[in-house]
Length: 555
Image (cartoon, rainbow, N blue to C red; front, side):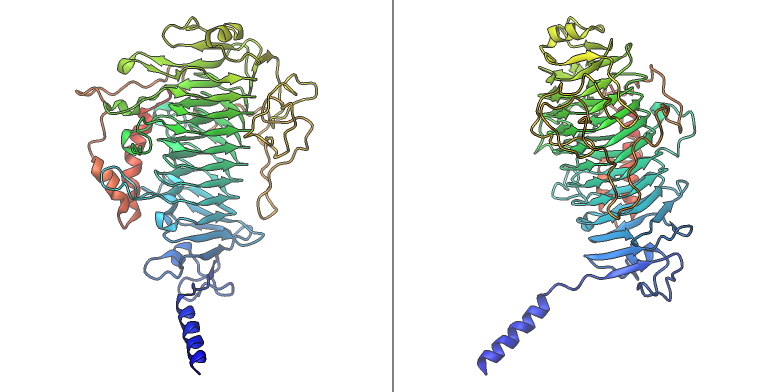
């Protein structure tokens, strides 16, 4: 009898501590928020009804499945906000479209809060948002919020993100381990009228400020108003691999960039490197107005087996070592790029263009784009493209040849120059001199198609002779077709190209530093992130960053 009582008691305790079973709720354009109960037979009408803090139904671990039948799949909802860990997805075989008009003031389409860490967005079309289509929010800030975190361990997969007001995806500080997989991002910057100057545009594909361990893979980013993607502000251990990026008004991929000092974690990164141990491999980048791949205050970067075609059409170079001003703040670090490894990359460039450029500026006591060796070798450069090193003491401050670059830097001893070509998908033709011209790189085991590399490696993103295949979305439909725009697609359609002289100047202030917007205090823009309503959170972040990022154009 005593044993039976003990067993009964244990069962009772177990029932109290057992986790609640995760639920699935359905939303449909034919549903009803009043009479529906969230079942497949009686779905809700709006996504925000499911997520509401007043009459919502979701709990951590639940799934929200959104019906998206052809011709009746659009949900016009702004500020869809995930507050707890959820999976949000389309119904199998369908694709739901969540749309927020860019005319909606201070809006994002979907925001993921730190409390929703671990969430997944899958097989959705997401468009609009005055500022962002998808935003990872943060509670971290300097000056009392150092224990806060951002929305982390987020999976964004099999998405179409398009026609955004500004950025496609925004990653805020300490939003770590965000995975972006098989995502297409296109047509950012729709809030800007055609012809808006580069200095007045700020609409990237992916904008990551101090979010570490981000993974971007097998994605297609194209027709972007400014940069394809960047990770800056001290973002560490980011991996960008097997992506296609084309038709950008600024750069393709930036490893680091230029960040205000208050977004750095100075305990982890006292020297204020913009990027630490970033890895960029097996990407095909083409038709960029500025650098194909740029490095800014990047430490220990690996840039390997990428193909860059027709980059730097307006300014900079296909591979660019830039400088960072970090808001001209007196306490900033502004370090030079340090210890890069740049191997097996193919630069298919016009004969009159710059292949590599190391920037130097005499401002702020002298700023250099590179400390020490560029770490470049086994690369392929287009015939006639040139090289420059602007650092003090350089004999190559004007454009020079590959031989002169080797003499100046001691780099690229095994690199080659020739009339390289690739097709519209970045693949090598038979007989290319890039075949077997590379070296083995431990961190690179496959090519842009996910096919195994074979030693000796080919130069560029493609390993010739391997089966070509486009990455396929998880539900088996809508393959990520590369090269759909065709070889003739050479310009960004939503805005006029900037001019070669479009380099911003430092704002004049009595202190010699960049002025902050007077309407938003430093404390206000950081503390507001913990507020209960999204507009207060987003306004503080965005208005400051919009000012800052248009100020910090590529140097």
